[in-house]
Image (cartoon, rainbow, N blue to C red; front, side, top):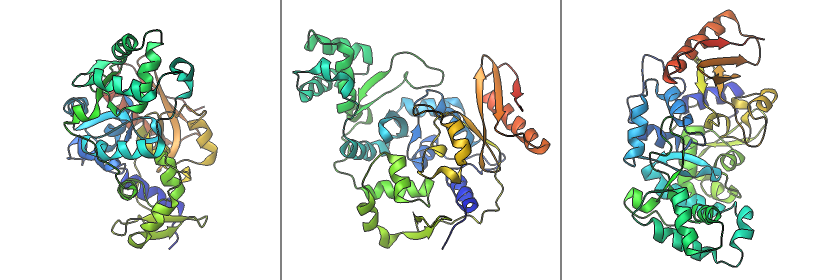
Length: 361
């Protein structure tokens, strides 16, 4: 069965919880929504709050803050080695799977500083220092520097970050909180060991539930893991197979519906680095190739966006107390009114005192 781009778009929006009417906020606890999404981008401190607010329609800041405080939701390096939130229960299998397949990575900047030292010894020292503790990265660095005199302490702390399963508990990572990142051993914070050798099939199932139908390349792009073709092929017997307009093979869970393509798609605002624009190799189901370069102008930046008619229609920004909405093309009067209405809700959630400005150039 072939699926059109609009069918993929509407299916994706539904699975990403972006079609819920404003009158029907998601009643689930925040950790269940995070679990549905598997991992929520958290490179910017406030971004997960906005990303969950736009999906849950009624989220209060304290709901996520409290879940981070008691371990129902945790923050740490996960997909593509970048900061994400996950449900505490999911971190137990997701982190070891990613760590095993990706490896530590990112070691080259510290090669000179750790020359002559065994990485395993640095990691062991870090685990010993952190056992039963929550401490800032600078404090961890200071303690490591005492163990390995003459070395750049912060480089040692980063080696521990890359080789040890760490989470970053509050006060790090909560609404409007800036400052030094806190670190804790994941097994300490979660109250038990992580899983050993979790299967890729778990990752595949959970990914398709929130992002499918999708190709093997899409799964690899989202997770950062490579060479997954064989593992997906082993699961083919339990999956449903579609094709997109290009003839690309797409996999899905057999019991999940696919949208017809004509379903309404409300205006939604998304934060920087949101999963919606990063979860597929072929992103045309949500943003055109022409507009993708405006959303992702460089390797390390993904602008906050907004959706009109289900597709990315522009970006937004905050300067001082003012929220500016910048469409890529001039909006109709009806769409402009809907965008301004939703931007007003966002302004309230962001706790801004200024105005909303629609920059229709």
